[in-house]
Amino acid sequence: MAGGPRVGTDATNPPGLDPARLRSYLDAERPGLVQGDLSAALIAGGRSNLTYDVSDGRRRWVVRRPPLGHVLPTAHDMAREHRVITALAPTPVPVPGTVLYCDDPEVIGARFYVMDHVEGTPHRAAHHLAQLGAGRTRAIALAMIDTLVDLHAVDPAAVGLADFGRPDGFIERQLRRWAAQLAASRSRDLPGIDELQDRLTAAVPASPAPTVVHGDFRLDNLLVDASDGITAVLDWEMSTLGDPLTDLALLIVYSDADLPDVPGVSDAHRAPGYPGGDEIVERYARRSGRDVSHLDWYVGFAYFKVAVILEGIHYRFGQGQTVGEDFDRIGDAVPHLIEVGLTRLGAD
Image (cartoon, rainbow, N blue to C red):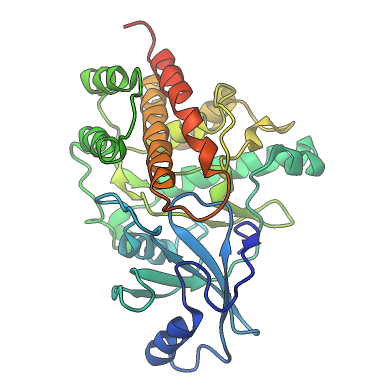
């Protein structure tokens, strides 16, 4: 799983993961799985949960755990992430194989799960996609859209996820959840954020039939092989049962020319050949058969959601509780996200 470059030089004890303690746990729970001392390195690129590349010199795995320090209520639920990946394994949605979930925070300092390493590249940078050429970039982006359609076509009950969420009132709860997470991370004045929240709350559309939703579906959360096929969908921490148009809208935000440059956020949509928002919507609507006539509301909500996520990261940076580089500039994008969200909702 090429989830970004490995960072740090301490393979004995990277931040948030002690390989020796992990091996002892794996030896007890999965005897014979590990054949030698484990090395581990933090995979760069994520700004929320921490992801590690782990190896015994013969095989490789990936470990996911919550961030260090400040963790928002209801966020960073490793059990849910592990459950949905395991459930989707027999479906057309490509996901890594899962090894185990650990609910004992004493092992490495937090609950975590282990999954198989999957070969593939997460395309985050426009200049990397540009090297592939416009034709391949377009093919990858279209495969991404079709993968989202495949996800939303999964029958939750058929894969054991009938109780994975509460679809009734999903949008209203989402608005309350993100408002609560904003309040938990609020450390400065954010002009327009309350207006955006109020306008979204006042005009909630009727949701289509519920599906499994990813919650953060974008190109750099996918692994792509040398044949431009999608080998895995990653980062399921926000997945649930709910309104599939929330996934589509977030994908539109991450493909929007109005999206400001944010450290750690992909600019892949700027690569030649990447389809524009209108084409993404058209392909999704045609292949899924869903009505997208109220998508502007969903896009406004998606901008609100991204603003809250980045504000949470900005808060953790201010508390000295982040691991990695470029966190000092993430908060600069939040005011513009609020402004664009209000614009997408139109005149009040």
